[in-house]
Each structure stands twice: as C-alpha cells, then as structure tokens.
Amino acid sequence: MIDRLGYNERYAEQYNANPWMLCKTAFCVVVERAVKLSVKDHRRLRVHPEKCNRKEDNALKRYYADLKQRGMPFDAKNSERYAPLSNEEFSHAFYELKFKEKSSPLAQLADLYLWPICMGGYHRANRTYQRLMEDGKLIECHISGDEHAILGTKYSCFENVEVKN
Image (cartoon, rainbow, N blue to C red; front, side, top):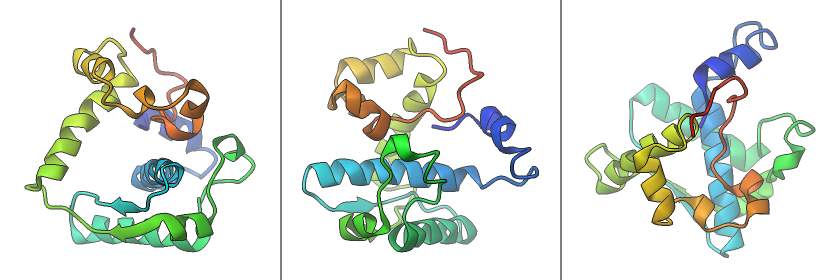
C-alpha cells in the first residue's frame, strides 16, 4: 500500500515533480511479493488484475513484461533489504497475465480485502482489518516475523502518517 501524499513528498523533488505512476510501484511490489510466496511454495503465479481501460490495462501489461525482461525497476542498492528478484526468477514463476472483469467473483473478493488492508496502514484497530487478522486471512498470519519485510504487506511512504492503533 502506498500513501499518496507521502509518495509525492518523497519523490517530487528527486524526480522533478514527475515521479512514476503509483500503479507501477504498487504493481511491481505486490507482484514481486506474490512471486516470492509462489516460489517458496514451488508454484507458478497467475496475475489477474481487474480490467480498467485500454490505457491502464496496457500499462499493467508493460509492467508485467518489464518484470520478466528486466526484473524490479527500483534502484538495486536502495531495495537490497527487500531481496529483489531477478528477471529470470520472474520469467520462471510467471504463468499468465489475464484481466478480470469487475463482475468477476475473484475481482469482487479482492475488492473486499483491499480496503481493509489499505486501512491497516492508517488505522490498525480498524474493525475489518482486525477481523481479517484474527481469522488468519492476511499474509502476515502465515509467514514468520523475519519474512514480513520481503513477503508481507508493504506500507510504502508512510513515514509521516500517524497510524492509529
């Protein structure tokens, strides 16, 4: 999850007020963490984003292809602590990229999870987020504490967010 204000604050000066689209950062991080989990379980990954419009769908196709061809797009030194995967690891782990319609039950289920996971970055005591945690429905419930930095939900650019507990 990426806090938009924190993202803009962190990267505006560095990229002359022209940082990457948030979707590129979010897509790469989420997909990489899912790939790491699939590799850990000796599986391949199907990536099923929700269909949006031609422009955004094509952007996601480019991000997917770039991961396969180049690996993670981030500065290698800055992202070293997250154990970034190589393009070969992505290529081997990727099975398919297939878009889902909004009417898809899978897309609707993902939407039900997305909001509380986002809220977890701002308000840990959020009732829905807490319920997902208590019921063991989030990745953090299934990985060890030392794996959180490379497999768990990443709350990026939250340095200046006052998280409610």
